[in-house]
Amino acid sequence: MEFRFAERKDVGLVLHFIKELAAYENLLAEVVATEADLEKSLFDQKRAEVLFAVVDGKEVGFALFFHNYSTFLGKAGLYLEDLYVTPDVRGQGIGKQLLKKLAQIAVERDCGRLEWWCLDWNQTSIDFYLSLSAEPMSDWTTYRVTGENLKKLAE
Image (cartoon, rainbow, N blue to C red):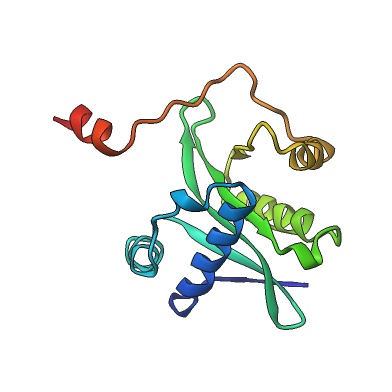
């Protein structure tokens, strides 16, 4: 298996993986991102990065991540927004290798941590993450402001 970072020509593939993940999570109707949106945010603004897992010349998984910051650590971290491996190659260690590669990137970039969210119902993923010594942050609740409420708050 090899890894490669997404290039501008890959925006269609990135969107394809995002939609496959959303379908798996029963959230496909919430995907409003377009190839133009991804091209702008990933390549023009450099807001996030995408790493592909490649087996026999075919992209079989992806991780979309970006830097966040910990004031307590005084260091940046890596935040994993999406991790997805195609169903036909699951169980072959590709997800683990993607996380291992992200951990290597975090260490190389002197990041203080690697973190992500997981849906509460996704016990398969939870068990996988626990097997990697990931710790659930049960003392924290995620809050979000979006859409019209975000615009109202900005006024």
